[in-house]
Image (cartoon, rainbow, N blue to C red; front, side, top):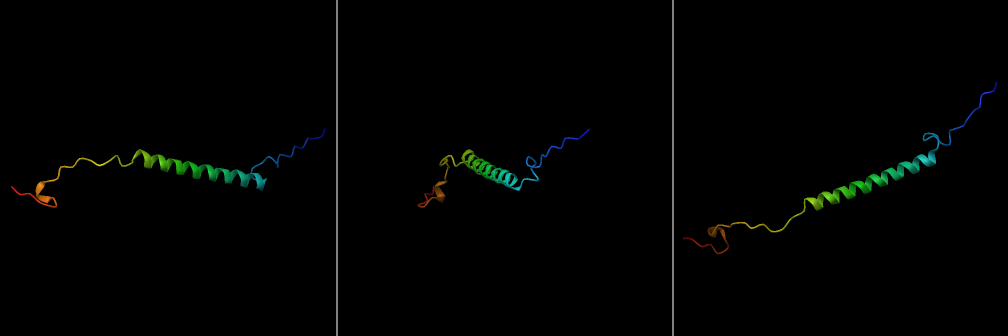
Length: 67
């Protein structure tokens, strides 16, 4: 009885340097794009909404008016 030997080294992540480096490169690119888009969304969600109405006392203006 003879054992059948199946060579799976070409499919293994650790034995094929070219496909593993390509996979790691695409993972890095995906993560970089995900972080950039996440940061842009965070800046957009917390953006400056405009000039608020602030009550300024008359005595602290450029031309102060006293009572």
